[in-house]
Image: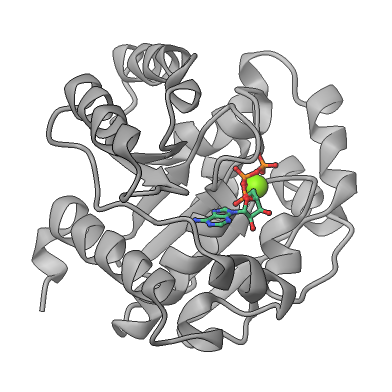
Length: 253
Ligand SMILES: Nc1ncnc2c1ncn2[C@@H]1O[C@H](COP(=O)(O)OP(=O)(O)OP(=O)(O)O)[C@@H](O)[C@H]1O
Ligand SMILES: [Mg+2]
């Protein structure tokens, strides 16, 4: 089965990587797609968002090649989760150097679940766990905070992905998601102009600042379940439609 592997990356913290990963996964599930959401962050935020507590040992073992990728069903239809937790942080010491960058790709290749999509929620920082996700992925999706400061330093991701592509990986930045947007504010249009000029053709519909997303994480369910008719649910549906059209046009229905 052909799987679209998507790394959700931004080395900045708190920009909306986890919120986007969980909610896009749920929107894909709502469209009838089967999704594996991989929590590649020792903070375990995507797991906690879905009400799963895990210490990360099983994922660490899978990366080391001594266990299978641990996945489980979630409350979101169509969405399975590889949970994570603090023990995964040991990967940073154990997997240094080039040998440690293809571990996720290998353990994913050994996993025979029937998913059309694999979404990887990366930790902040361009570290070994993020590089493992990037080396397994064909698509990189970058959530950015829709503010002037949100774009600061983004060149580092562009540079890292370009180097990987130069070394033979079939990977590229395919989408930039403006998160926590305030479309009614006057600066919004200016910020969007800057994002669009930096990433022509790659900017998805915006995700507005919304308390429904914060509430959804508190209720441990994606927003399409906790508030299916909210503007936030519609924003993530629009982003997901855009991603399917651009990343897997054959899957448009
Ligand atoms: N559109 C939004 N509206 C309101 N709050 C949001 C929105 N997107 C994200 N948040 C909130 O911002 C905080 C950070 O979001 P999130 O955890 O998704 O970022 P992250 O990039 O994954 O962070 P980290 O780098 O720590 O993994 C969370 O409290 C989340 O609820
Ligand atoms: Mg996160």
